Amino acid sequence: MSEWKAFVGKISLFPAGFSGPVVLSALDLFQRVWGPEVDSFQGATNPLNPSVAQGRRDGLAVSCTAHPSRIDFSCAADQGQIVNAAEKIPTIDNVVNLRKCIETIMKAIDSGLTTGAISRIAVFVQFLRISKDREEANRNVVDILPDRFRLRLESEEDFMLQVNEPASVATVVGARMNIITKWSVERFQLITFQLPSAGIFAGGQFSSNPEETLAASVSFDNNSVPSNTPISSHHQFLLLEGGFRDAIKKQSNFGLNVDGLKL
Image (cartoon, rainbow, N blue to C red):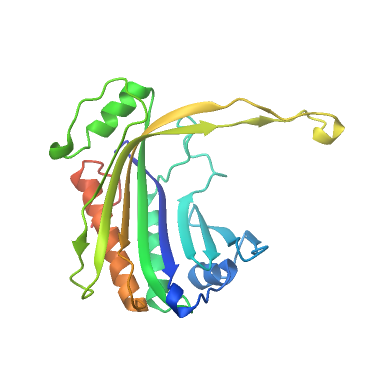
C-alpha cells in the first residue's frame, strides 16, 4: 500500500469579465452538483465576500464557494471522521471517492452548470506523505522528483520546486493549458482546544497545544490560459478532464502509486 495519500481535489471556474458577472449563489451551485442536502450555507454579506455551501458525500467533505470573479468546488477528507489518528492530518484513504467527486463536478459543468460565461478553468489535486522529521520529508519529496530535477537535500527547510510545462489541447482548438507541478515540504499544525467540564461560560478558558506535522507534498495545478471568448460548457469539461487525467498519469509516473487512482 502506498504511503502517499490524496489530500484535496478542487475545480475552479473563472467567470468572464467581458460578459458581465452572472453567478449563482454557492447554495444553488452546490445543489446542482450534489443534490439538495446541505450541511451549512453562508450567503455573501456584501459584494466582495463569497457565498459558501458545505456538505458531506461518500465520506468526503464537499464545498462550493461562489464569487463574481471565481467559483470553487472542493473535495477533501471529512475532518469529523478520524481515519488515522497517528497521522494527525486528515487524508483521503478511499481515493476512488475523490475521483468520483471530481467527475461528478465535471459532468455537472458539461451539462451547463453555470449561467455566466467562463473564460478560464482549473483543476487542482494535492498528495501528501506524512513524515516523522525534516530529513525524512526531504527524502520523500526528492525520491519522486524526475531525474532531470533530481537534487540532494539533507536538513534544509521549506523546500519547494515548481515548474510549468504549457501545452496545447488537441480536443479544444486554440486552447492552451498551464501544466503546473509543485514538489514541496509542507508544515501543518494540529491545535487541540480544551474546555473545562463546566464550559467556558462558567469561567473556563480555551487552551491550545499546537503540534506540528511535516509532509512531503506534490500538487498538480492544471489551468487554461485565459480565453478572449467564452469557453463552452463542453469545452470546459474537456479541458478539466484532460487536466485531471494528466494529474493521474503524473502521480503514477512519479512513483506515488496512490491506491485506486489509475487511468
